[in-house]
Image (cartoon, rainbow, N blue to C red):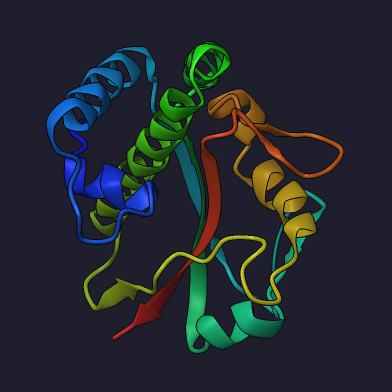
Length: 189
């Protein structure tokens, strides 16, 4: 995986400005160290959407509100979870203790990395589509009216703790921190 300075700068809220000089060197060094410890893992599974929900094995994920609007016309969906791993979290904590700037940079590197991981996962999912099917953009719990609580059934349905090492705290934070869960609708063209 590669992560460019432009992507990292975006997550550092630098706008179109790219890091230069000493800052660029620092970003590049921290990016390389973060890439060395990252262990990307993804898991996904396709489900039919029936009666406004995804149901399997007694677990039910409601497709309502803005998620339902987003998935209008989708008869199936992929539930997905990706992470760059717990070692990244440890690395982030270590650098944050000694430098808040390094902590900010590594946070931005992690955000760019997990986005790349999820984009690559979507490319893999596209290869599983039948002719005439397409994906709608991924939609994560906490966006719009899709509640964070939906992460519990979503992660259970893809067996994220076992297959990706991703779990939830009582306050619904994902562990490892650079993890993403999402619903990706499947539409027939």
